[in-house]
Length: 232
Image 1: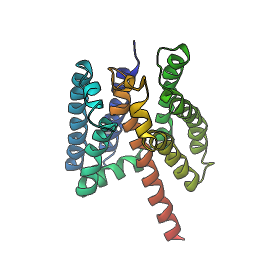
Image 2: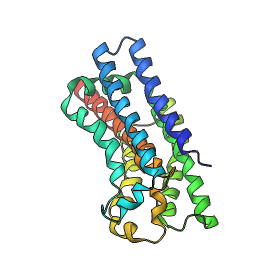
Image 3: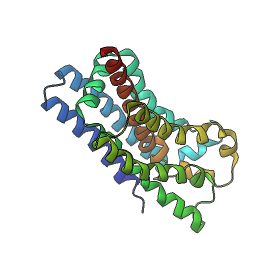
């Protein structure tokens, strides 16, 4: 049994709920809601494709010919392309992030505590790759830190710069130890576990969405900090 499908549905429901909440507050135009829903629909389609590929072990077959964790880039591409090209979608994300209490966004990262499952499997020998330790332990600790940071943000006892740095650290903890030694991981015995279903849902969607939320909050917090400095 794996909690990853549940995590995926939970993150998707959170994203949809925050969009609906912002719309009901009158902060989103109908076209902006459609833009967000279009991206969420594209991610839903990718989740189906990802699941089918995982169930048929196609990821493991492609692992021999494509020397990277290619599935992790798909959700990033799905949201970053409209973010770069569509002002409507970009404004929608800004409104959602501005309207949503900052400590809510931080609290979402508590889901990273779920990395403990992979760590335990690694300790028990169910997973042979050291990847679960190099990624799982920092990710688990980041999830724990989210409890403290969320409380500090709620109490307004954390500065913008520190919140930005914390989110960027959450992004770096996943990206740097994954892609800098990527050649090693792709040849490490046992690393194919990351391409098996349901584990493939982690890099293919769940983790990608969580670090995307890190980047979103860092971006919005940076703009808010710039606006405050400009008003002084």
